[in-house]
Amino acid sequence: MDKKYVVKLSETEVEELTSILNRGKHPAQKRKRAHALLLAHEGDKSDKEIGLIVRMNDQSVTELRKRFFVSGYETALHSKPHRRRPRAIDSESVARLVALANQECRDGKQQPSLRSLAKKFVTADGRHVSHETIRQALKKFEAGSAPPPSRVAGPAGWQTETSAG
Image (tube, rainbow, N blue to C red; front, side):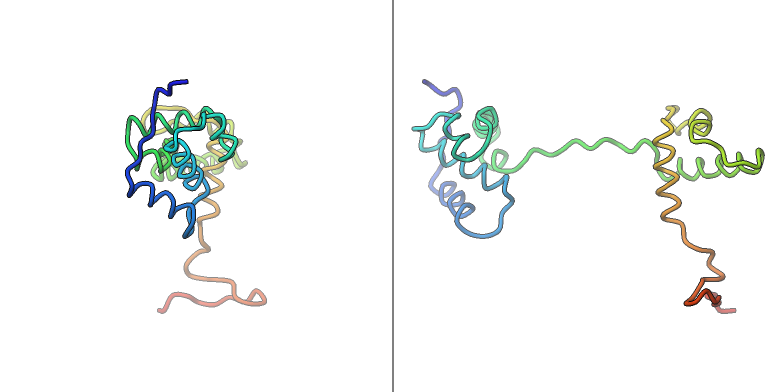
């Protein structure tokens, strides 16, 4: 069967892939890709056979061949960058959220529910966020807040002054 994406490695690339397999500490995925590229370079095995030897899906081997053929050696050897989803609430929005929650506490004399905060809160770019996002933002804010700077509880509950004055 003719392969659409043929892997042809230079001698230096073969040496580098062999050294990845034989020496040093490398991530497991990088070692698998190196092994698969070497086997594909030999040319006598199908993607399914390479997948069984390297313990990869045969479709992954095909994608690795394609990435090597289209983008080159370095791109095929290293993993694709992962897309990160932008945060729904930035630090300024958290400050506005905390202010809104404190205002709700003062007005109603009762802690507001997450759902009521989510209904009233709108991000800087005009989006509404879920109650779960509100919960996570408040939890992170609470975890990051420190005790008041003037007094800190010491051992056995006694108070010490932290500000020189």
